[in-house]
Structures are given as structure tokens and as C-alpha cells.
Amino acid sequence: MNESISALRALVQNARSIVFFGGAGVSTESGIPDFRSTDGLYHQQWKYPPEVILSHTFYESNPEEFFRFYRAKLLSPHAKPNPAHYKLAQWEQEGRLTAVVTQNIDGLHQAAGSRRVLELHGSVHRNYCQRCGKFHSLDFILSTEGVPRCACGGVVKPDVVLYEEGLDQTILESAVKAIARADLLIIGGTSLNVYPAAGLIRYYQGDKVVLLNRSPVSRDLAADLVITDPIGQVLSQV
Image (cartoon, rainbow, N blue to C red; front, side, top):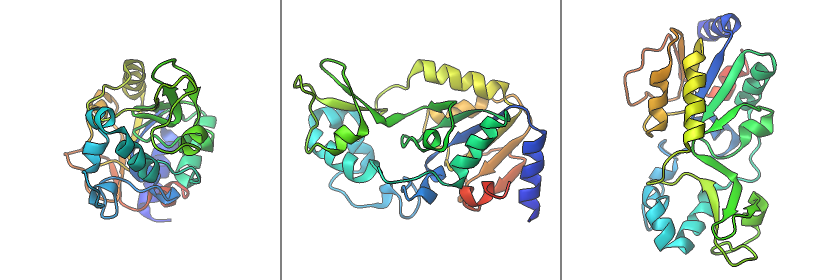
């Protein structure tokens, strides 16, 4: 076991209130592409840039193209949790981890058994009719083509936060409280480029920070421990 893994294990064993703040890099080992790596969505060729397609304005003005991209690139119904998801669920069950704050929308933390998951950007597993409010599952979206519609005729919108849309204030407040109360903050699989989500880490009042990311983050971060190996590979050894 290398020194970094030993150091991480010691930090985890001494912590009483861990919060994990994660991004797309947590799910890449499950086969879900991230956004900004070499093979990520921002490096793939589409008629429009992903950040344009995933905007509220584009969703309203060009829903057919939005849902074509959404089904092709944001839905991974066969993806399974990887060792990172399972380890975090284990820590929660052991009473060490108090919350997972995630920018991901894939639901893999819950699939692995985590219960205290704060989904900053929503979830592909929740979809609602914009006319009558009826809930629709991911399977419903997958079973449709073009713009999905409810039996009432309304468009069924995924409960995911698009560009130009605000984050759920209740989720934000819960995330702030969890981070502020933590004595160990583990940041994993995120470039800390997306705001306001990335700004939440400033509420951390503890003095132990671990960064698990395969590439440098875009801002200065005073981390006690930085590990650049795949997150699932790292956490499976802790």
C-alpha cells in the first residue's frame, strides 16, 4: 500500500463527519463520460456545443434536438456503481460519512446504497410533466422518441438543472450545512469549474481536505492530500 493510500486511510479512520463532494469523474469508471477530459462531452463534435444544447433556452426553442442529445449522451441506463460509490455507501453505513454532495445526475450513489445524497443538478431518474406535474421514470423517457409527452399531452421534462436554471435552494442549504459541519472534506472527480456548485466548498470550516482528481483543478485548493489515480481504484484500497 503506498503512502498516499495509507494517509487517506488514517484521515478517514480519524474522521467523525466526512462529506464527499463529487463530480463527473466519480462515474467515469462506470462507463459514463465526463465533460472536460480528452474524451469528454465538450470534446465531441455536435452541431451545437453541449453547453448550448443543455441550456434552458435551447430546451425551450429546440426540444427535438435537446432530447436527441439528452438520450444519446446523458442517459446511461446500464451503468453500474463502481468501487467509489460502494465505498462511500459503506462509510455512511459505518456512521463516518454524513453526506454525499454530488453534481452528477446518474443516481449511481443511491444504486450503491447511499441514502444521504444531495443532488445539486437533479437526476435523470425523475421526470415531470410540465402541464399536470405527473412523475415519470427514466424507463418512460427511454421508451419514447422525440419530445416525450405525458398522457395529458404535456411535455415531460427531466428533473435536471440546465444552464440558465437555478439550483434547488433546499438542496443547496442542506449541502452548505453538511459541508460546514464536516471534519473531513473529500473532493473527487470534479474540476471545480461549475458554479454555484463549486463555490460550496468555501463553507467548509474544518482543516482536513483531500482531493481525488486525475487532472489539476482550475483553482487554488489547500488540500492536505492530493491523489491523481482513478477514484474507484483509490477508495477500494481504503
